[in-house]
Length: 334
Image (tube, rainbow, N blue to C red):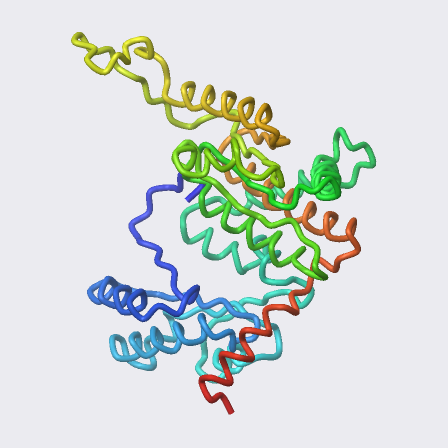
């Protein structure tokens, strides 16, 4: 959603990220009369949410097309050799791609896990990878003025040691919403260990300025803010002049909405800083596949470095097993 994909004659739906019966039921109703293919992603094949969703949707496809024809409609992205999904793919003849053994889920967007769905959305994955490679080159520099991912990781840890334990990722473009959601998982799972962590939160401005803005401006001073801002916008929308001017907006007539949005960012950054909230801005050139690849690699590298700076292993997530074990017990799992 961050990018403006090529016009493709297809809809892309997501499932397996929650346990809402209403959600999956509504999805089945939505796709009832559509021509459907499925990409199922799971390293083990036993993660509850995607496993349940796949079982239900696979059954739906089997009834719709028959067991033989669905082989052409299901692609699995899973472990190379082991796991339930690998066994299913092999037994039922589904095409499969490999999730590298040394890559965890939150770091896997630049593997087949992310690349195949992104390609299906009509986005140039070669450009995405080129952006990631360019960012990797910069991240090898020992000069912090060039190695911005290290610099960002260092700033986060300095602020943490000064009592700033909540980071708000703020963007003034709602197309970045789900990128911000990925960022929350990346840093939440990578750093939330050992009784020490920076709590990752995201805000969609200017919308959330009318809700979270008050808290950021005058709430407890245990927060810092990172703005994610595109230097260029792909679309220009102009405020028209109105003869009656009943809304008193003619002072903005002829100005681009993205120009007004930029001024909102500048004002917000200044106001929050004056209110005692340290902030920094991560600039990227524009909403392109190349720039998105840069951002993915940038934040992945920063998450790893940030964890190591605090003596945390950023690549495991032992805490997530606690609720799972309790849930399985309640469900009577053998």
